[in-house]
Image (cartoon, rainbow, N blue to C red; front, side):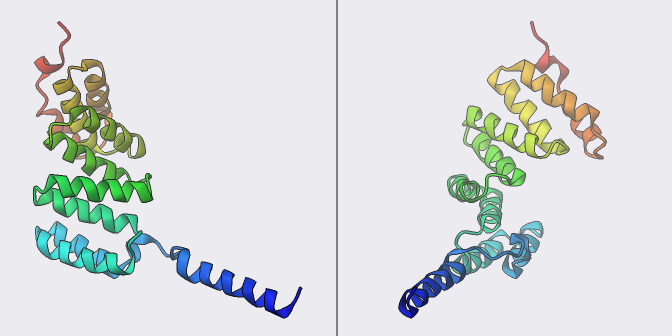
Length: 180
């Protein structure tokens, strides 16, 4: 193999490794993301959104950043853009239970109950210990009229060791899941 051919191969590998491959560090290690999560938790959604846009300039294919942006939009009640951000996040990495959870909530707010139910199924299959996801899934299934699936989620909630489970169980109207 000629020197010129070796050099071309080297340049291709160099370009591929440094321009196309995502970094190996965890996506949550991004300092922008950590700061935005703090702002989201503090209820400063607009600041979180501004920081997340900065983060996306550096890492446009970071699923965690898109998911956090979707959560901020959801909290600001901007459900259409929340849906878009969460769908983008899940198109990059479908194994994010919290993105599925917030997408389900977004669909529920937009009265897209079948889609909400599907996303709650994804969220609860990826995180079986989320009391809120099981509770909200049960509520959506009651609205749809699928009492069997509602009971399944309420039963999972009842068996949980989560500190929130008893509180959420107290909010369930037993007459709403009685088959007549």
